[in-house]
Image (tube, rainbow, N blue to C red; front, side):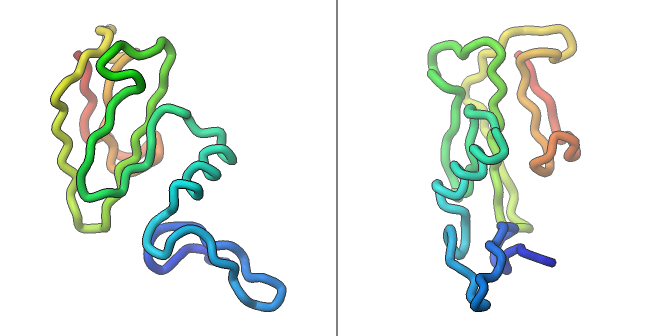
Length: 123
């Protein structure tokens, strides 16, 4: 069965016993509550976020101060198909490591860790 929405690639609830689907989230995007619950359910990283606005900023926790060791941040930026994402890094201070083994920034075309790699950056 297909439980995906018609407006965005979101999950919809199963039909109720009386055939009526209960409303959840937003019609055009996931609400902050939907995102928080999905993160909790799938034990996602606490560092990062899902960004859906047409413009904005993001940074590591505690910026401009340093970040904690062993931090794994994932920022998911989604747009409507056909739109482009432009990233402008105005400040990047990462711990240097051999072959980007540790601190680095990856840009992927898709959410999954095996999505096509568009770029990998280190200090």
